[in-house]
Image 1 (cartoon, rainbow, N blue to C red):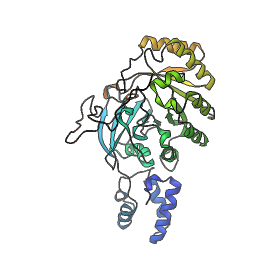
Image 2: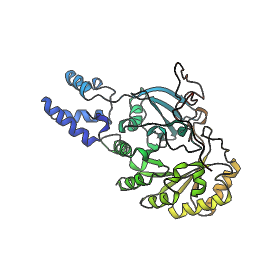
Image 3: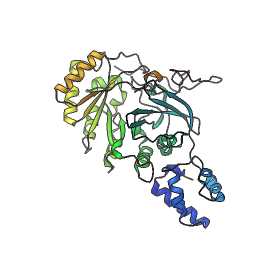
Length: 369
């Protein structure tokens, strides 16, 4: 039987109504059940005490709710909070809550691990362990609502572990769950899908009527440079990605991690300005953080400031983002799950807990220059 939390609210309503009718239950019961999935979630049907005990027991037996276990929670000195969720099959993912004023942004994962092996990203060194199901993706928000001190994110960004568009079917359903008023009810303009540019799935995302935001993990303004740090460019060249984003009737953001001597040269700046102006894109300049697959040097703060000013001089809207959660390895590109060997344990430590991997399923490969 399909997991009830993997269904959109409309599909869940239909499935539960049919099940209730087969049991001879009153039709109005479905209006009690559906809000307990996402709007006012319960961890177990047994907790929905407005329902008769016999019905709750039947629901837990036939329509069990997915369980994610908060295994580790770490708070940064800047207020960022990182969560490690253990999934039913033993795999794990991380998500990061970033508070800023009245805004609470949750960075969520769409895969356990990632197959892309971008040179600057720690997650890619894990390889792909598996795709997440829709409920496991949207469930990272649901778990915060179920916490002893509930937190409702105002914004959600698909910038955690994994490449969302390589798990498009599940991500598409999760987008509905995140956005639907009878599910989590987060506005589409407050939900950002970040992708390296998986061209076929970009076309599918562009067809969605909701105004979801799109961020492209660009990190280089030419294919020649991009292929040295992002092997995916061999399959989906930058020129094809640029054509695909032209189908979006809304503003696109370019994410650009600055790497000394690799993508912060004058010629990189000129090429980036041309791409951004053509696409009408906002450019987010990001510091390079430790943990990538190969040793890379971050651009200096001075160089980043100069790069920013010169981009603006070319008429490009650009922002230099500050690092958040760096002291708990929760900053951009740092999410990585330790996979202990037999008899090994991963103990929570102040700054290193789940980010030192005694072994990984795949050995990282150095990208071709």
